[in-house]
Length: 419
Image (cartoon, rainbow, N blue to C red; front, side, top):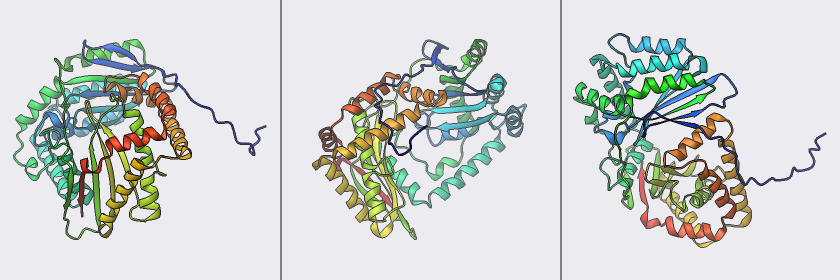
């Protein structure tokens, strides 16, 4: 019988036995990633397109992404969604700077019927004038509402200054985006970036080989032909600005700088530094600015990743009257990391936390596939995560301080506040 008065032994994890997806060639450049080992009847498929925001101007990628299921000449959007519902499907679409992704969750027995409903709806989307006008009106209304939020104002200004050297990455929505949009422009983007823009397919589910073959045959017509590139040398604009928002109760703060993604030699160790600073509930920023000072309900730091670059960001919303004090406390916490060694007890806590998060992220075929695709996006595989475990065990307080001095330079930060 388990004796609950005795603390269980801590076991060190040195390696995770990952299950690799099977990779099929749709073409030599476009792959299908298949994770079969699912112990239930569920399935998921994802279609990735070279149709991110950087591929079009004045909101065109956003508008096209939102219109994919808006109806064909034969079916209305309602009919299409009713067909998906009848088959038990749940669809999500996501648009980032660099890619567009359409995801369908379903039972495995309905995956192929749903794939055909979806591909028919997308391939034959009609861009009906009525649907386009309704979408633009909704998008404009949402934009105007967002412009009243300090968090939105800070984030868009931060994006402009963070990606300052790149016209396409720094582009933000403006009111003229929603005026005089030509349907032919939407159709042209759709043809170039969807009908000729498929870059990868991911399937999770206990499916037979004939289902994979049929998927490849169905989607082969959409594959991206030729290479495509993303910007590599992007520089942020250092310095601080404030956007005044009349009658605002809070001030939103966004600060950070261009850094790197998983391919960089310092990435794994910097993730430890970032966690100590602001990437879990007991972080130094949370302990100081939320728990001790009471300036905010939440503050955090993060690393965001793109194809060739990444960036570091700290984000929070605080009372208007404590904006400068909050920035001062953030600076103090960074300077502590640059001048004082992290004590062993805190570092061990962070190591165990990060290892636990990685184990949690590898729990089950869906999560494991997500981990793999996160690495694959930058040309890596599961070896990246086992190296991350080794780096996690090896990191020292001296290494943490070294990285803080090297990368958390206050004068290199883009700092934006709005409120």
